[in-house]
Length: 219
Image (cartoon, rainbow, N blue to C red):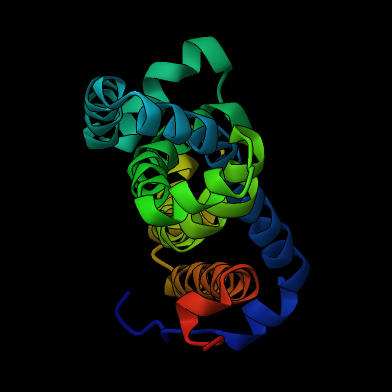
C-alpha cells in the first residue's frame, strides 16, 4: 500500500449505494440472529431458573459452541446450508448470541427478590401474571445487558462470513486486502463501528423505556 492514500473520498462518493446495501445486509445477518436468540433465551432461561439442574448442562453446551472458531463453523455448515447463503452465517451467530443471552436471562429471572414474589402470590397473582408483571420486568436490565454484548459481538463476527460468500461489510475487508486498496477497509471499519454503536444505543434506549428504575430514571 506504499504511496496509496488511506482514504480515496471519490471512491466512497461513487459507491454510496453499494455501501448502503452492504450495511443493510450486514445488519440483517448480524442482528436477526440476536433477535431469534432472545426469543429462544426467554423460555429457556425461565425453564432453567425453575429447573436449576437443567441450566448447567445447557450452559456447558453453549459455552463449547461459543468457543468454536466462527470461520470453522461456517465452513462446516456449507454442505447443509449452502455457500454464500444467509443461513450459513446466521445459524452460528444465533448459537453464539444464545450462549450470551441464556445466562443473562437466568440471572435476570433470579433477580426478583423472594419477598416480592411472595407478595405477588399473596395479592392473588397466578404464575403467568406473576411472570409478566413481576419476574420479566425485573429481568429486563440483565436481558438488555446480555443483548448489548450479543449484538456487538454478532456485528463483529458477521464480517467473517465474507470468507464463505456472505458477510455484508466483510466484503470490504476482503476486497481491500486483495487489491491492496485501503479505502474499502477503512470504510468497512467505520461502518461496522457505527452499526455496533447504533445497535447499542437502541438497546440502551429500550432499557430506559422498559426499566427506567435501572437507569436512575425513576426514584
